[in-house]
Image (cartoon, rainbow, N blue to C red; front, top):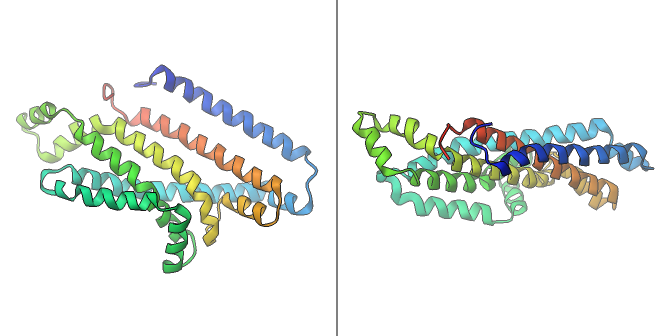
Length: 246
């Protein structure tokens, strides 16, 4: 793949191998363990599959909202006329991420009601800052002489942004997106507290019912999903980054 260092190539191979090995080990344990009725019901394949799909939906919906909001805001904050808004936007983003995610989830649920919509909004707020910060950083790092050269060639401001600035800033933006995705997978476990489902249900139920096997299974599956998302993010980073934009 293009634009990949030796370390990135190793990770692209190593991450799926690690995920497969750990997941295979968990599957073997699941098939051979002496589980009680409660554990067997919670760790039933259909239930695990359903919870995993719920978790993936939460992450995907939140990630899409983060990207379609944080990147345009980041672009806006790097324009001369609106650069003065940068400290305010960064402050709000810092507040959203520094607050405990479970607190954000619960407070929004009290205000807006329980369910998937509130969970997605909470996760979007939590994942907003990494993408915003990296978008601003990436755009500000673009060589000003390249921007001036593009303008000198007769490009409009929009063309300069889409053909020069964003492609060159893409590696930094995608790093922020990858960070946000991993954060969303972990934070998505708290969605279960407001009836939004996800793999956090296994963790919460394991704690509530003192079922250690269910608790650990939920934690393992969330961790594996985070690794898969990290791997997918690295692939997207390579695909979406233009040649030479490193």
